[in-house]
Length: 354
Image (cartoon, rainbow, N blue to C red; front, side, top):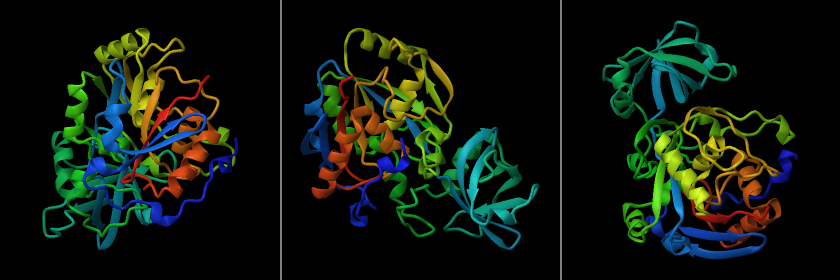
């Protein structure tokens, strides 16, 4: 299919720059293919679940991956993109052509330019030629703790912030169940789940498991080809423990519904599943790219935000619930003034019939 087949007109005022308060007041559109759209709120989500559903969450933790510093007297702004080794990260760097191999970049806390710097050495260019590989000159065991001090949350480019960011973004752009450092973008569907909402779901006896996909910076990159078959998806590291793989597989065998909280959890589940629907332990990178025509093996329902036109994520939801259905759903959402993207509203998608 052509990338333009996934285009739609999105008014700028529909893009959310701050989350709804309280979180459970955000909108929730229940999409039942081929053409049923039911308006509600996040607080209604538990009522849409079945007693034997198994919810699957991505428990990655976003690191403050946006850094500001200097190489000599020249300003450097870097956003960590992907871990490529011990203390080594590919980074998107403004004016990257100014950097040379073996240069030392000194990063400073945005609110304390007189602090001792966090230093990184330029190792060269990334594999794609668009990024720079940095090696941080610090003890690997404390790197993530130092990033908490020196970095700013790497919000999507369509959310505009001052250099220092908003302190509450460190709370708002992180799921309440985040556990494993490594993502440079949030699994945004999970941002809707407060401790109170999770407790309500637990009290209903509905089970959940956690898996981990470290969301990379490639999630923000536009698709630059004309035909979807020519697009190369960015790779991200994922982990599913043997115990959780067994629980998911058993639920599938028992005929229970597997409900993925977010596209990142879905992509990892589908990467780990075989053609029979069995989910296997997983501990490697995945670059799965899901477009219409894909046969879903593990996931039966999807809770997700509203996505960008022509994005790989909009292609994924079109594969899940049908192209015509999702275009109509998004048209409905725009007319009803739902809020889009990372801090926006959500939809609960039923899978289209095979």
